[in-house]
Image 1 (cartoon, rainbow, N blue to C red):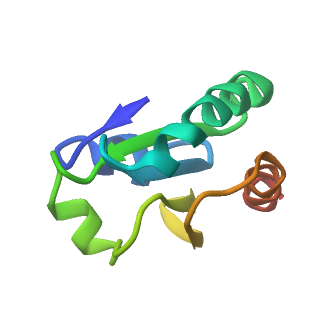
Image 2 (cartoon, rainbow, N blue to C red):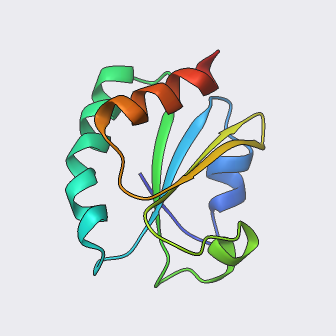
Length: 104
């Protein structure tokens, strides 16, 4: 799911289920390599967590609000609050660990 500055609060902060969001850009090679992992995880977790992406080139406000200085940056949210933040390309297992920690 692609989110933007306008619908961030509705889709992420007000989400009834936990969220993993990736801040990315089209020119970011590591972001592109992770894309398929996010699609796999979205299918594997099947509605237990919302997996979203926000393009930092098209949306300037939200990345600034969350102090995103490098990409990819992953944030997890639960009940409207940030639970974890990690920066850089991640393995599938690291992303699974991140998701599992927010689902507890």
